[in-house]
Length: 128
Image (cartoon, rainbow, N blue to C red; front, side, top):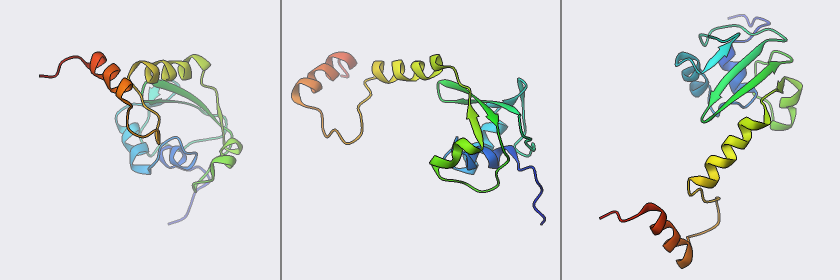
Protein backbone atom coordinates (compact mmCIF):
# COMPACT_ATOMS: atom_id res chain seq x y z
CA UNK A 1 0.00 0.00 0.00
CA UNK A 2 1.54 3.31 -1.07
CA UNK A 3 1.67 6.14 1.43
CA UNK A 4 0.11 9.39 0.18
CA UNK A 5 1.30 12.85 1.11
CA UNK A 6 -1.85 13.60 3.12
CA UNK A 7 -2.41 11.41 6.20
CA UNK A 8 -5.81 10.55 7.62
CA UNK A 9 -7.12 12.93 10.29
CA UNK A 10 -7.36 10.20 12.95
CA UNK A 11 -3.74 9.20 12.38
CA UNK A 12 -2.57 12.82 12.48
CA UNK A 13 -4.44 13.51 15.76
CA UNK A 14 -2.76 10.48 17.29
CA UNK A 15 0.66 11.43 15.86
CA UNK A 16 0.56 14.95 17.39
CA UNK A 17 -0.52 13.48 20.73
CA UNK A 18 -4.06 14.86 20.99
CA UNK A 19 -5.25 11.30 21.67
CA UNK A 20 -3.38 8.55 23.48
CA UNK A 21 -4.30 5.88 20.94
CA UNK A 22 -5.35 5.90 17.32
CA UNK A 23 -8.49 4.00 18.28
CA UNK A 24 -9.53 6.88 20.55
CA UNK A 25 -8.90 9.35 17.72
CA UNK A 26 -10.99 7.26 15.33
CA UNK A 27 -13.83 7.00 17.85
CA UNK A 28 -13.77 10.77 18.41
CA UNK A 29 -14.17 11.30 14.66
CA UNK A 30 -17.02 8.81 14.45
CA UNK A 31 -18.91 10.43 17.33
CA UNK A 32 -18.65 13.93 15.87
CA UNK A 33 -16.16 15.39 18.34
CA UNK A 34 -13.68 16.24 15.57
CA UNK A 35 -14.73 18.99 13.16
CA UNK A 36 -13.24 20.83 10.21
CA UNK A 37 -15.00 24.09 9.31
CA UNK A 38 -17.68 23.25 11.92
CA UNK A 39 -18.56 20.05 10.02
CA UNK A 40 -18.04 16.63 11.62
CA UNK A 41 -15.48 14.56 9.72
CA UNK A 42 -14.92 10.87 9.14
CA UNK A 43 -11.68 9.28 10.39
CA UNK A 44 -10.53 8.77 6.79
CA UNK A 45 -10.59 12.50 5.94
CA UNK A 46 -7.21 13.59 4.62
CA UNK A 47 -5.62 16.68 6.12
CA UNK A 48 -3.80 19.51 4.37
CA UNK A 49 -1.45 22.19 5.58
CA UNK A 50 -3.30 25.18 7.05
CA UNK A 51 -6.46 23.24 7.94
CA UNK A 52 -8.25 24.31 11.14
CA UNK A 53 -9.47 21.43 13.30
CA UNK A 54 -11.77 21.60 16.35
CA UNK A 55 -11.52 18.72 18.80
CA UNK A 56 -13.73 18.22 21.87
CA UNK A 57 -11.53 16.48 24.46
CA UNK A 58 -13.37 16.14 27.72
CA UNK A 59 -14.73 19.48 28.92
CA UNK A 60 -12.61 21.64 26.62
CA UNK A 61 -12.81 22.36 22.90
CA UNK A 62 -9.34 22.56 21.37
CA UNK A 63 -8.66 24.47 18.15
CA UNK A 64 -5.67 23.29 16.16
CA UNK A 65 -4.00 24.48 12.97
CA UNK A 66 -2.16 21.96 10.81
CA UNK A 67 1.35 23.21 10.07
CA UNK A 68 2.59 20.04 8.36
CA UNK A 69 1.24 16.55 7.64
CA UNK A 70 2.60 13.77 9.81
CA UNK A 71 2.36 9.99 9.41
CA UNK A 72 4.27 8.72 12.46
CA UNK A 73 3.98 9.66 16.12
CA UNK A 74 6.63 12.11 17.31
CA UNK A 75 7.98 13.12 20.69
CA UNK A 76 6.18 15.80 22.66
CA UNK A 77 8.96 18.32 22.02
CA UNK A 78 8.53 18.00 18.24
CA UNK A 79 4.74 18.43 18.13
CA UNK A 80 5.11 22.21 17.68
CA UNK A 81 6.63 21.61 14.23
CA UNK A 82 3.41 19.97 13.01
CA UNK A 83 0.56 21.82 14.71
CA UNK A 84 -0.29 25.15 16.31
CA UNK A 85 -2.62 25.16 19.31
CA UNK A 86 -5.03 28.09 18.93
CA UNK A 87 -7.23 27.09 21.86
CA UNK A 88 -8.35 30.14 23.88
CA UNK A 89 -6.96 30.35 27.41
CA UNK A 90 -10.54 30.32 28.78
CA UNK A 91 -10.91 26.68 27.67
CA UNK A 92 -7.89 25.64 29.72
CA UNK A 93 -9.19 27.66 32.67
CA UNK A 94 -12.43 25.64 32.49
CA UNK A 95 -10.37 22.51 33.03
CA UNK A 96 -8.63 24.00 36.06
CA UNK A 97 -11.96 25.06 37.58
CA UNK A 98 -13.40 21.58 37.10
CA UNK A 99 -10.34 19.98 38.70
CA UNK A 100 -10.51 22.30 41.70
CA UNK A 101 -14.25 21.75 42.26
CA UNK A 102 -14.43 18.02 41.72
CA UNK A 103 -12.33 16.89 44.65
CA UNK A 104 -9.45 16.24 42.29
CA UNK A 105 -6.44 14.84 44.04
CA UNK A 106 -3.03 15.09 42.36
CA UNK A 107 -1.25 11.82 41.61
CA UNK A 108 1.40 10.54 43.98
CA UNK A 109 0.16 12.51 46.98
CA UNK A 110 -0.62 9.35 48.95
CA UNK A 111 -3.70 8.63 50.97
CA UNK A 112 -5.81 11.48 52.33
CA UNK A 113 -4.96 12.72 55.81
CA UNK A 114 -7.54 12.48 58.57
CA UNK A 115 -8.48 16.13 58.04
CA UNK A 116 -8.79 15.65 54.26
CA UNK A 117 -10.93 12.53 54.86
CA UNK A 118 -13.33 14.53 57.06
CA UNK A 119 -13.56 17.22 54.38
CA UNK A 120 -14.27 14.57 51.74
CA UNK A 121 -16.93 12.96 53.91
CA UNK A 122 -18.53 16.37 54.47
CA UNK A 123 -18.40 17.15 50.75
CA UNK A 124 -19.87 13.80 49.64
CA UNK A 125 -22.40 13.62 52.45
CA UNK A 126 -23.81 10.52 54.12
CA UNK A 127 -23.68 7.46 51.84
CA UNK A 128 -25.77 5.19 54.05
